[in-house]
Amino acid sequence: MIAAIARELRNNERFLLTTHVNPDGDAIGSLGALSLVLEDLGKKVVAYCQDEIPGFLRFLPYSDRIVREIPGRDRFDVAVVLDCGELDRIGNANEVLRHVEKIIHIDHHSSSDDFGQLNLVLPGCSSTAEILYEIFQAIPASLSLEAAENIYTAILTDTGSFRFANTTARALDIAAEMVGLGVAPDKIASEVYDSMSPERLRLLALSLNTLTLRASGRLATMQVSRRMLEETETTVMDTDGFVNYPRGINTAEMAIFFREMDSGKVNVSLRSRGRVNVAEFARNYDGGGHHNAAAFRAEGSLTEVVEKILAAAEEFIAGGSQ
Image (cartoon, rainbow, N blue to C red):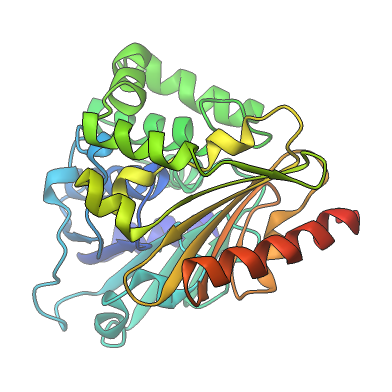
């Protein structure tokens, strides 16, 4: 499949690239890397993401060229959907994709659907950017420093700074190669982890005050309400990574971060360590992800969703899910 996708990227001219709403480092890094490589090959590219790019990722080359509205709908030979397990998670681009004859789907989530004409889903990879690297090798395409920075950042963030279980030897090899191309790890780390605004720090303080431990400390949770966002003059983008704080508690096997949305829904982010399979838990609510990282959205008020999900999570942990 890698060879088939590489052939499509070589042989077509007009590409629409897109990724999931509420983008993370892998989503934006993958968009940027593929856009830069295709443009270096002389292709015409539109890179789209429905939602605003988080502030800590705006340093990435090409991030300022990712659009939030797609110009035209009949101008693309191929659409490439990156790091997205379900087609409806790309948001408004879904309508435009109906007019594109060929969809290439590249992802690393085990719960990913096969919605493209070409589907490359490799759960054993650390990130979508890692898969893209293998495709670039197959084209073959040389990587600029700008593309390398996108790939490195995507792998760095999706492995939790090389701390999570998806940190494989291959992921480290690719990261090392990006450093060999000129990527400065200290620069990337500073941009990603040391660029917090005062407003975001105040939001984190409010969220940490909601920290709750249940199931004898095995379940840790935090939340952010719409009121907290308004009070601190922040946006949902400022909550990125908050789930890692309850995950960092030494007794926690499962961490949940609840974020109230403005549509009568709550975004639920899940993290775990060891045997607890949060992707399995998320599938009960039409969500998905990896063994140790998943998410879904639930209808209801923040209070209602928190109460319901925490009760279910305690049962899930007690059941000894693998």
